[in-house]
Image (cartoon, rainbow, N blue to C red; front, side):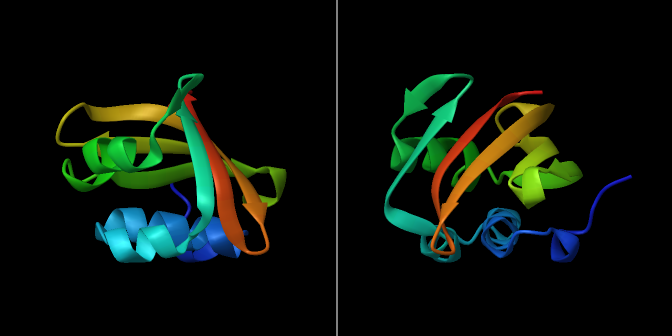
Length: 107
């Protein structure tokens, strides 16, 4: 069973997931602080390069299995046209209603 995006607890995380699933780069960038950072499987990544490759050019999509930490940690069935589907964990740091950092990796 999945959690509908509209039911996610944290508004910034909800906007992030909506933007990813809509493949809307402008809406996605609007969810982030100007100096946002991220990591994938424990390695720091360039946010623009990573999101272009793993989300936008490969049509990434998030199906939420669970949330914790007041909606700032998600377990997701993530799929894109490059890698297919995988179970991933996403942890978000939210500052002033925007995402300052997210860390993702295999769940």
